Length: 117
Image 1 (cartoon, rainbow, N blue to C red):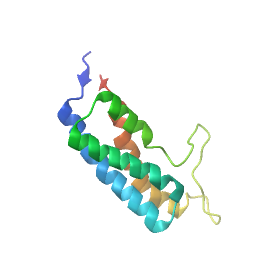
Image 2: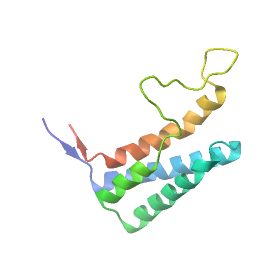
Image 3: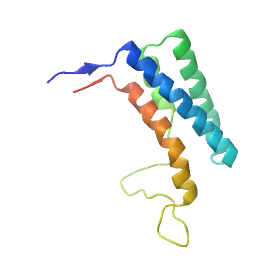
Image 4: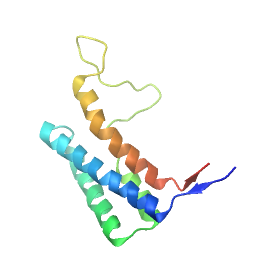
């Protein structure tokens, strides 16, 4: 087996994916007035991502940034998404929100991964 270690160029690409994902998520939350109490933490993460991209970074800083982008829901083994009252499908607002939330969570999550097989 061999291990792949992310290069500095990989990390730069990852930050360049995270930044617009956070920008889109923040804009969506503000526009739709959803989870406004979380917007500040996403804005802080966005500011940090931009700073790291401009000034350089360590793996420790990338890992901290990745951890700072939190999910809006406590997803656990028995978690189910919010449902519409009239049917058993996930709420439309939740489905739409996931289009913005998941790219940011995915991009942030990869920052703390050092290598894979």
